[in-house]
Amino acid sequence: MRKELIVLLVILGVFLAIGCTGNGNEATNETDTPVTNETGAPVTNETSVSGQNPDAITVSAAASLTEAFTDMESQFETENPGTDVNLNFAGSGNLRKQIEGGAPVDVFASADQKNMDMLANETFIDNSTRKDFAENSLVLIVPANSDLNITGIKDLTASDVEKISIGNPETAPVGKYATQALTEAGIWDQLKDKTILAEDVKQVLTYVERGEVDAGFVYMTDAKTANPGTIKIVATVPVNTSISYPIALVSASDNKEEAQEFVDFVTGEEGQEILEKYGFTPESE
Amino acid sequence: MLDKIWFPLSLTLWVAAISSILVLCSGVTIAYVFARRDFRGKWLAELFVTLPLVLPPTVIGYLLVILVGRNGVLGQMIFNVLGTGVMFTWQAAVIAAYTVSLPLMVHTAKAAIEGVDREIEYAAYILGKSEFETVLQITLPLAKKGILAGLILSFARAIGEFGATLMLAGNIPGKTNTMSISIYSAFQAGNNELANLLVLILVFMSLLTIALTGRFVGKLEV
Image 1: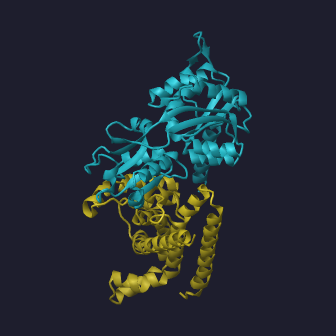
Image 2: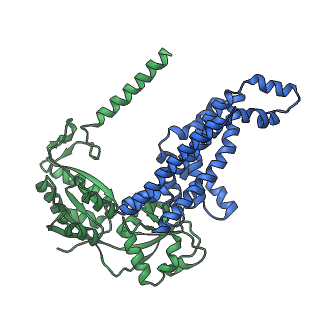
Image 3: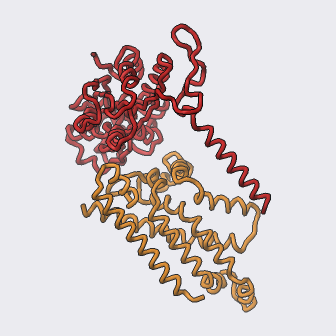
């Protein structure tokens, strides 16, 4: 009995030790290799020292911005070594609720104007800092091995199409755009019972990639990030509202200066270049 | 509002009931085998059955999706037989509930069966009863307190199952939104009124379960 107790305590001790080393390291920092600034001199990342980095900003961004903003994070941190960017991706509705609930966020980038408007109305965001920075388009996708002959949204009403995934309109703008498009096409009522709601656009993509549903609505940019050979883009789906992404500073932010620098980066040349790389249509300023 | 409460409630009870019946049959059988039999790899089987008890629900959900999802080993078999997938159905909710509550039944029933004096079983054998008859007429009745406790635990666990259910059955209003999923949904949507009502009902149901357990199990004479 004593031997087992000792083993148990050792294991617990190891777990505690591992847990402790997690603090002070930046969990979201992808750049492990030494980075150099413009003059070619190596720059040490300040967050490798244990303790909180005073110039850390939290950016809540729509799930569809995952790849683009992750790229921006590393480039921004390279050029601004004193600032550390923490990225928080989820459905824009969920992010909005977090900010309403007082989450310590500095920047909010939404996939629709509506969520930003809701925050602006309650002055959770600083409307003077608000800018549109990208546009996207909605596409209909199916699993690569689908044999259901879906060529457009009208084909979704066929009886052999059983499950269609859309984002949850409460939490993901991509779901709202999809329902809007289907309502405009006059087929929403027929398709309502076939819909499987996903928390954000990435989950819709996963469902289609895995073949768990017969079709799904995602942004063009997400369709491009799908695992190769898992999905087929069937058609671009026109929506009456333009899919435009706003970004703004959160009013309660403690790091407005650094946050504004990040927003300027996103709306500036470098940010727009990265967004374009991932298939977003840059906003002409 | 009523349909937003009635459907989750009836679905939860239905799923928990079906799951508990399945757990009762398979769980007691497995418990008996664990209690009264020895075989090679028994430790592995016991580990396997205990695993859902210690794994986080999201891990269980993930593993189940891999197993019974459209491209999973079981999932493909199911599709070939039924022509449709099992994900996003109430049956998936049953699978999730079953997986997490089985270990509770097995452990409780196993302890109860082990507590049955083997001498009594041997006496039955000597008097001509087969093992099967002995199990049904002697062993299980003597272990019924523990088995009932296991059943109630499993039922309660099935009612409260959330993580794995969300991943396997999804949140489809009118089809797979159990009570716990509906509470989460209502909370997410900021619908505190609905969330409060659902929580109240769930708490009431849980209290009722505890009260019934106390009365019922207490009354069982051994």
